[in-house]
Structures are given as structure tokens and as C-alpha cells.
Amino acid sequence: MKSLILFVGLLALSGCQEDPDMMGKTRAEIRAEQKECDANGGSYQRAGMFGKACIMDTGDGGKPCKTNKDCAGVCFADTRTCSAKSPIFGCFGMVEDNGEVVEICID
Image (cartoon, rainbow, N blue to C red; front, side, top):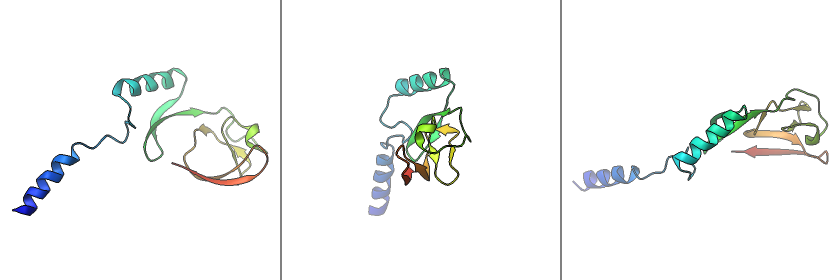
């Protein structure tokens, strides 16, 4: 019986969990962000681990680069080419503005 009461209590509390896609924002704020993203040619989608983001085409994806200064997004260290989208999520090497190669993970 105690197990059943504990289970029901935990089930009730799980309903209080915040939607991870909301990221502490109201539905109106999210709709406004999505509308602005769409108006600017972006794609409002699930990104990273914790929610949604406005993903934009950089316009210079695949272009050769020496540093991030050469790109609208990032300069990938392994290919020395610019990213096609921004922001970028996950782990990758990029070339900083000063030419230093860094490994970074963005969630």
C-alpha cells in the first residue's frame, strides 16, 4: 500500500515538471521568437539539449576559411570551411579569430 501511495504521489509531482522546450519562457514569448525567426528566413526548431533555436543559413557554407573572421558562422578546423548554419550545436573544432584551433561543445 505504501508503494502505491508513493507511486501516486510521484506521478502527481511529475505533472509539475516544466516543459524543457519552453526554457522558462511563456508561450507568447516563444510564438514571438518563432514569428521573428520565420520573418528573417530562419527555421525555428529543436536544437541542442534544452529547447529550440532560430537556425539561420549563413550564406557562406562550404567557403574556404582561415579563421572565424572569414565566416558568418564558424570556420571548421578539420575542413577549413565555413559552417552552413548558425548557431551550431554539438562538438567540433573551430578556428578562432586569432588562428588558434579550439575544440568546443555547444549544447
